[in-house]
Amino acid sequence: MIVAPSILSADFSNLLQEVKEVRGYGAKFLHIDVMDGHFVPNITMGPVVYKDLKGKVDIVFDVHLMITDPLKYAKDFAVAGADYITFHYEAVKDVIGAIDAIKKLGVKVGISIKPNTAVEVLNHILPYVDLVLIMSVEPGFGGQTFMSNALDKIAYLAAQKKQYHYHYLIQVDGGINKETAFLCHNAGCEVVVAGTYIFGNNDRQAAIKGLLAL
Ligand code: DX5
Ligand code: ZN
Image 1 (spheres, rainbow, N blue to C red):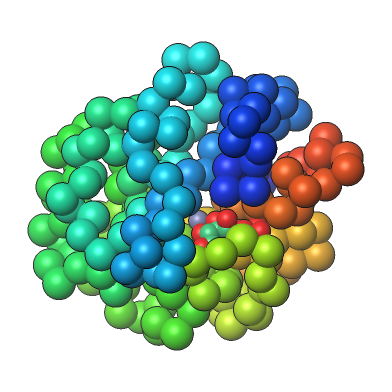
Image 2 (image 1 turned 90 degrees about the vertical axis):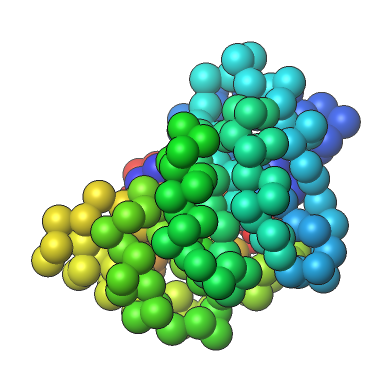
């Protein structure tokens, strides 16, 4: 399992050390939650927050855009050092066009769906993406409870990937802890995002180790 700590729950006054710490425990992805107060009812961070981390920690910058106009800002996030840029299916009319445009920025591209969006809407998109992110909470805030309808979606994506030899990574985000990560792993998930469970944990090393062992 690839572990992607979400910096939403990190101590921003000590961000570089926080990121170095989780990298040291074996986290290979760094999940960066971007919210615009419009697509979701919360405002978080722009590219300026992580651009200076780039080059200082060897970790994959996994940017999750929860914003209304991802194409308007994708270039800024790419220039700041994103490795993956994931945007929401619900935010964009021409999804395939947006995927192409983001790929041209030289980054990998992911698509995400909210809990009330059926996974089958992604059928025609799956051949073109590097990552599919299933939201297991309503996007907007950390610290919410895992919604188990994510599991069927993960299993569906795993079956499609196997049948058609697609290359995307299957990622889940929201309410992840050791128990919910175990369920996601069994369903076929390859990357777990965890904010509260890692950064809010008294023993972050044990938390990450438990997830890595799945
Ligand atoms: C929610 C964000 C998540 C969030 C996860 O909108 O996309 O990445 O930080 O937080 P936890 O792990 O606390 O549910
Ligand atoms: Zn996220």
